Image (tube, rainbow, N blue to C red):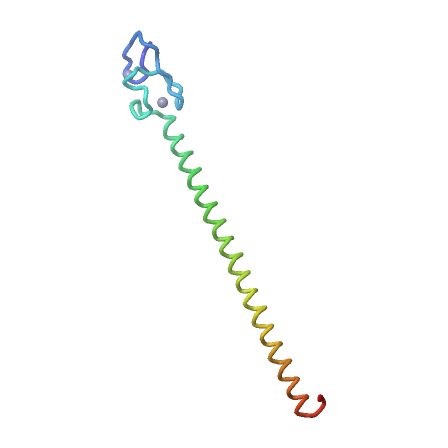
Length: 103
Ligand SMILES: [Zn+2]
Ligand SMILES: [Zn+2]
């Protein structure tokens, strides 16, 4: 069997690279050792996948933070309105009491 990289012929079982499909001797069976053309695209794919995951995770995190902020703001707004309404109700009650409309 001839190695695709060094063209050394050996009687051992050839190693088939799962990235480029070539056959190699034991010295060159690793993708790094035969300048594997399949390895680059494999790495690129991994890289793209990884980048995609990071972007997706960042987007999800952003959405979560935004949703949380929106909810927090809503709670504060509602609380503020409740306080305003209670104050206005008390004011109205005292004004009416002062004007002797109420006992
Ligand atoms: Zn070789
Ligand atoms: Zn290869």
